[in-house]
Amino acid sequence: MKKEVQNTGKKNIVLLALPQVQLLDIAGPWDVFTSANRFLNSEKQNSGYHVHLVSGTSEKIIYSGSGMPLSCSYTIYDIDFPIDTLLVAGTSLSMLDEISPDVYHYLQNITPEVRRMGSVCVGAFVLAKAGLLDGRQVTTHWKFADTLQKSYPKLEVNVNPFFIRDKPIYTSGGVSSGMDLALALLEEDFGKPLATEVARHLVLPLKRSGIQSQFGDALPEYEVMSPFTKEVRDLLKDKLAETITIEYIAEFLNMSVRNFSRVFVKESGMTPGRFLEKMRLDQAKNMLEYTEMSVDMIANKSGFSSSVSLRRVFLKNISLSPAQYRKAFKTTD
Image (cartoon, rainbow, N blue to C red; front, top):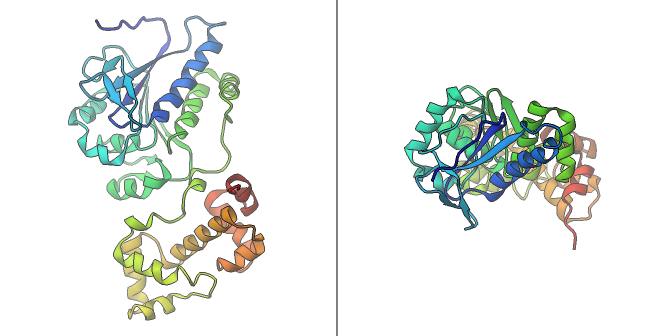
């Protein structure tokens, strides 16, 4: 028997679950919206949210990436109530090609009827494939931002924010960023005081400091680099403390400076200078996490001219100083 949705004045929130869904992509926003209900019920009985877990398949049981079964109230084939906000939860990239075309058709058809639509983590790939993100600034998990940009060049992918609002579309970064997005949607609907109260209840900041890319490497993973880019990286990885010029790299590869620069930008998506800066940034981050070296020594060993230069690069790329980064990410024995 189909579950009836009462017309109580509450906003219907749909969390769209796909096979191999990340649990926190669902549970995080769910807890934000349902926690808001607990605070609202004492004052406004007909205000708040109805939160629905909806399957992106014909089955109501979806298995998460961790193997936990999730029981959905509806599927995209039998949902029959007006939707205020729909969020597509993330799944594994390997599952994207197995998603039924019906999911994309459903999202395309429902878009005009939904006040807001968004994604959590890799859910952005689903919205992108449905053609709903063209021309928009979006974000996704920092690890997959380059893949999203290359796969969908009409998008403007910004890896830094925990979420991006490009109304009526909202995209959020990796996993826990879905809670940042849900808090922002709650603040839009019911104001900052309630959003702050919910954040405090869930032991979260209303707005996280820093940026998403502080959690990942500045460069893409080695495995996804082109062979040419890997060759340059391998050449430079043990020489970062030295003075490195484009002329040196080009000569080593038996190329002219002009040709090397042109080919490298095409293969890596960035200039050689920017690539070298990111390599040095990643090495400095690693040293801050795993050594007791002073910031001055780390700057020297990573190829920065001074600790001031190192600080400038950190602030530009991850909005944290080296000292702040070490405090947040230093490993403990």
